[in-house]
Length: 208
Image 1 (tube, rainbow, N blue to C red):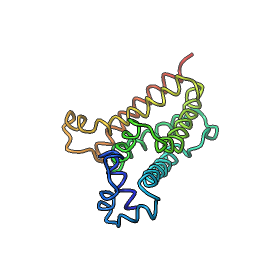
Image 2: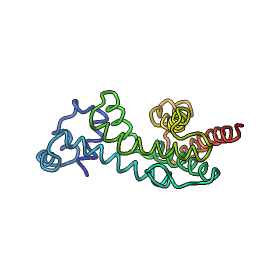
Image 3: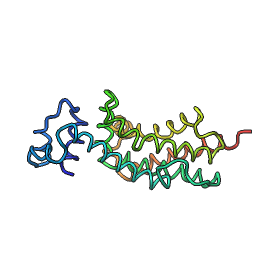
Image 4: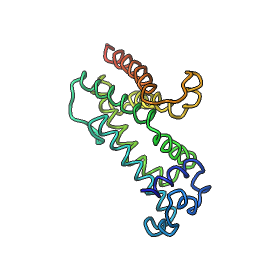
């Protein structure tokens, strides 16, 4: 696990091509030969990092939405709205407050800039199924079809407002006058994010 953590951090900071196996082994305080032994080489370690990210985010997604497979069990609109609100709170708690989320986002942003099979593992393993589940919850909360263009974009917007506070962490801290973003600051972010989502859900639910 030390090698995976070290690779996650270094691949995110320096990129895959800019990181040597020697650097990873040194950061993990491991023998360089252990990378080939356990993972078959640098590319295998990169895949293991992707699987680590998938497992971690799947755990958060299960806690937030009640599972990762779509569709969820049939819920009343009020309960579905409550699930979406809880999902937003859980996303903020993880993405905004937890330090390891920064390393995950850095790694994924690197992969997004030059898509590889590693990004496919992350997309297929967690992004697509979690997004579909959130869309299914959205349908139950609002009556809008889960796979409609509007619903899919709405769910991306729901996720995006949270993700900004990780990607734009530095300007947020400067503008807010915060020395850091911990649990107290994350709670304030969650309050606003939930209020935004609640207003959207209320407006969509009341449409004729």
